[in-house]
Length: 337
Image (cartoon, rainbow, N blue to C red):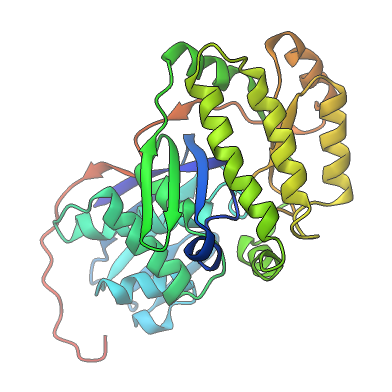
């Protein structure tokens, strides 16, 4: 049996510039971090006592004979891509799916990591990211960018740059005490709404064609945000004000990114002392992230008390194998698999 642990991510700046149609022409950059909320994927070969050959447990339970019969597109395509058979796969997570934290990509990365380990081989971070991008964007045909798969595989606080040649991941070098202060000044709340990211991304992708100027400005904010973080002489509160600026830019890209109720929540937080914030992910619902100075945090928590507060800590590990027990497995000779 193999169990993988893969972190969720929060993207601060540059979201939208990671769409291939955009960055291949204009370049793109994202500043993001992973944090200590995870999805867990366990995989083992299914014992041959049952009248089905694959059991898949996520929000549903699938018991099927053949891989081609699997309903879940990511599981079906991943198993076919890696020639996996006779599996019991289970998914569990600290936070709900479809909530703007890269949950589907974290699952894809964690599942592929588990498949490699079950076959007795190691997969590096870039390999996992590349395979997850291919799985979601090509084999499953889902709209969206490619930052989520990279963040889940690599982990940590990173700047990711995109161009026609691919992507580069560069850790943001920040003093430990300053990174701790940044973590302490961020507060995340669940709005109670969830939507399928790919549905929103489809509309966003169409809108991007007319928003090149805004996207190039959002890319430029990554430079400014990185400078704020790495220059200990700069006021860290500037990071919060920059979040407010990028949120306003992002809202202008597509009407599906925000809603009236989310806008009301955002304004309530700003009135309570937040300097800036954003809705994490594709939009439409999920988690709101705010930057609030320490002296105003109590006031913010009172103002947002009707929402579920999610404490978190930054993490650096990316997708990891937390349990590995090798199995003896001999594939059956069955041409109908």
